[in-house]
Amino acid sequence: MTTAPARPTAYADATVAVAVDVVPLALHEGAVHAAVVRVEHGVARSRLAFPGGRVRENESLDDAASRWLDGTLPGSRAHVEQLYTFGEPGRDPASRVVSVAYLALLPRALPSDGVLWVPCEPAPRLAYDHRTILHTALERLRAKLAYTNLAWALLDESFTLGELQQVYETVLGLALDRRNFRKRILALGLLKPLGTTRGGAHRPAQLYRFATRRPITVGVLPDRE
Image (cartoon, rainbow, N blue to C red; front, side, top):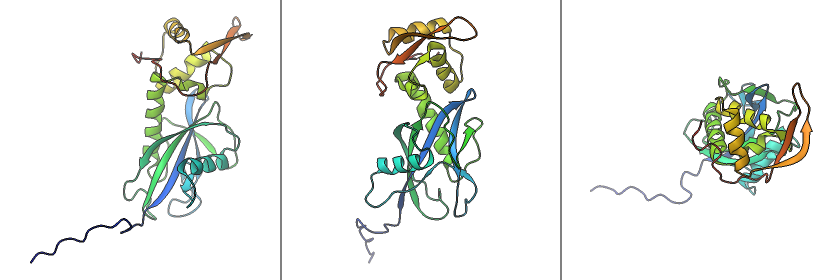
């Protein structure tokens, strides 16, 4: 007589820990950079990784991400959004950990104790599965630049059209036609002119700000020029 397998219960084998990992990105020296820290304990000690760790018992995922980001880059005022859940067995050699990753975008690479800003390409050597997390974060950012106004998160409150175009070109890794880009971006109504200019090597450039600094869906680059 064959014995039927035991039915699983809600608490059977509940040995999985939940963590968050935060991927801070900013443009620095003409390239996309990520903020990383050195792992302090365990088999990955001294290796580079994104800031993050276990979620506390009475803490939401979003609050945990904010705690780790604020502890790493105090006062960053980053735009933060949930990225993806990574739960492959063996991703953390010490124990079974499922991590919810968050993307954090900053207008500049802020210096902070214990933080290194490293270029994202070529991808740096990172602990755990953090190179996979970085790849996912970059793909998310590139996609959202095409269909949202998320470029505001990588810029100061005021900027020139040239600086805005540089965000797109740096993140996407391609050159955009200056006239077509400016015509399209202005036609979308995303920007407000400030009525002031910024001087430079050439003639002064008009300053703009985003009409809203929150994500909205809009076809900025529908053809991925």
